[in-house]
Length: 107
Length: 119
Image (spheres, each protein chain N blue to C red):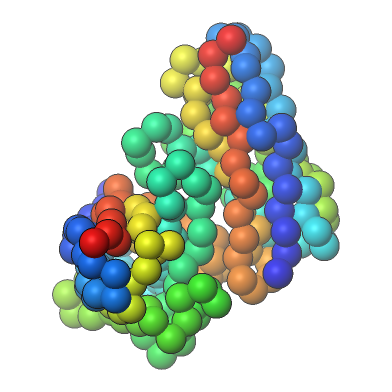
């Protein structure tokens, strides 16, 4: 199975901060990666697909980049509703695997 | 608007069974693969199972193979997960998810249904 390693596992940030989360795959996955946001008590919501494409309806402050084994999710200016846990998912190789999550909380 | 609504969760004794359902609306159900993903309390996301749009193809995580059965009724626009021989490790919120481009590229998720395995 492909291992997806996210870093950091958690971070504290302030409203307006630029935040970057990294996801590394144990082997190449082309751009078959999505990013998900999960607010407490809610279902995951996809933000980014194909590593860098913004899901319809998602604010443009979210962006994704990368290909192969290293990927990043960036929030350009953190808003109060962005405090949540973020997961990456690879679907290049069976079985699909998630990163362990990155919790973003308020500094 | 895509909507996925799960039901069927609850408290079950170890070794017991449950059938989870996911009612879909807002899209042509039969043309999409569908999946179940679970999340144990305080833990991350774990893919459980996927079924093709026709129902002919099914996939399972090793942790549930032989105990869980995914199925669908396209006439009712409903996805199912039959879960048997439940253990404490199966306690989780179970989400149904639609597969977008790529069988395992989950684009829309339901709100989840909680399965608690306890005596």
